[in-house]
Image (cartoon, rainbow over all chains, first blue to last red; front, side, top):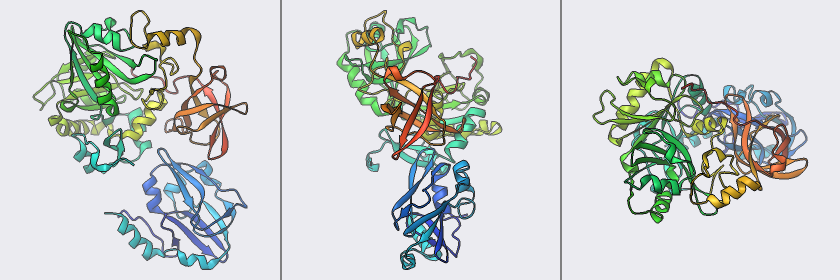
Length: 133
Length: 370
């Protein structure tokens, strides 16, 4: 597999390597395969509290590997409606299944037009290729 | 951010790149922080064997009829007790008892001592030694002429034994030998020492053999599941073993007594810093090093504040997720009256308090039997 990792077609992406899957007014958020690979061993996820107001491209929770602490940025503004309790107990799910079982939070999207600020799969792939020299 | 242009590289730099290591700046050097991932490398060292490039560390040779007198005056441990080829851990202190560096002193033979210092303090330490140099001792910084590879873990001896005819059982813990390895013309200095809490060896040799020796060790270790290990695993291993790291548990404002290193400070001799350290030993210190583990899931890290009964009690000096115990562990300095084992503490992480408890030192007991 090349260094860009898996990039599912149906998701939108940030430059900080988060993804969002939009379903009506709800968005499921996580970090990309590229991001989990760069972090390697995720050992702790500090989940956002339900009800927390988040702003697009502002940090709203934290992912830690053995050697690093990384902010997770919200792909869209809105309110946290749930967080993935499974990854509190098993943070390695973020490594094993970044787009499925390793999702981080669900957000009620405040303004869907903001999603136009994000990249689609092809744009994200091009963006990653630009990062890797 | 350190300037990448000015970073030094070890003779194994190209080997690290070939192995896909992630390189980071560390103490002025461009070093591998991990090859695969920290947890796998850590566990490989605990269960089997890990290989570490430690060539960034510095080495000096002190020789002459006054070498022993000089060292006794400079460092905290009692060097006169060393047998030929034996090594001991030391602090090098300022007059006020705080620490210039921590280092290993090997007595090679009468009037000949080999000193191993931290990579980031090679110049500073040497200047400090030169400043106090007396007649009858010759000080030589030989860091550029020496590469260093550590082989650590329960299978370390089996791996190294495949490459030499010398019976490694003859090297006891904290002792060294100069021995021949297959394919290396010059003698390699090897000691049964390390920084992981496991049995294992540190090896010192001319940098021109570094790639050859590194690859021979990887090949010999293949059947034992050897892994090259970066500074990430080196750090998590030493934290589990509660070994001090200069810049964290020791620095220019911390004394060895505060850092729980009284066992390497000997008052039966005169040395720089003795007066303050003796007072601290007798009268106590204002802070004390503790070991703690988290009782809820969280990763303590350097500088995070430690709270006890609602009061700020101190700070974290080193913290990590323990790959072996699978929880947050750390060391830190707190007021002595709060340092009792079993005391409940909390660590403030991003504005939230996470619970922990003070525990016995170390987390992980040395497993080498020899």
